[in-house]
Image 1 (cartoon, protein in one colour):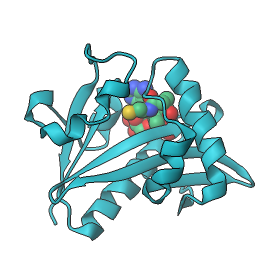
Image 2 (cartoon, protein in one colour):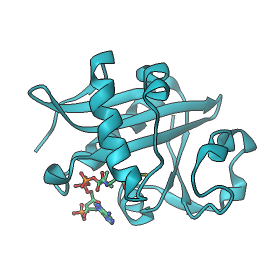
Image 3 (cartoon, protein in one colour):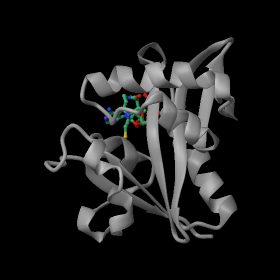
Image 4 (cartoon, rainbow, N blue to C red):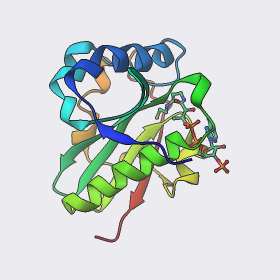
Length: 154
Ligand SMILES: CC(C)(COP(=O)(O)OP(=O)(O)OC[C@H]1O[C@@H](n2cnc3c(N)ncnc32)[C@H](O)[C@@H]1OP(=O)(O)O)[C@@H](O)C(=O)NCCC(=O)NCCS
């Protein structure tokens, strides 16, 4: 089933905050503050069901040749229906439209991203700029996320 993916609107922020931090509390992804979501609202995409945000994800531009998929989350009742895959595809298309070839992510579930066309890379291969928010991670400096990259043909 194809879900409608839309740019997030400012009033989606509180629901996205709740969704992301629900999984962050379980140690499955990084937490995000509400102010961080507001400041980066243009990075975010959502899937809505009526007034409810059932999934979100973000594409953040890091540099001229690097973008990152962040804060990907699908509400539990709607998982395993292809929404996560469609959100990743949407982010990759956005990167392609912007002319940015490599898209990376840091994840605890490399298997999911591999299914979406990503390949595991050594974290040290990523430019230092991508580590700017790591000091806010509860696990810092013992990072156990896996870095993955998808090279698009732009
Ligand atoms: C990870 C997540 C976004 C996947 O969303 P989803 O909508 O359930 O994923 P999809 O249904 O599109 O799955 C696509 C493929 O990935 C697989 N997959 C989904 N979740 C997976 C997981 N946790 N581990 C391994 N593979 C997974 C699916 O089986 C499917 O494979 P198939 O096409 O062979 O059937 C969702 O489980 C989630 O929100 N998890 C909690 C937050 C999180 O971990 N976010 C990632 C942070 S980087």
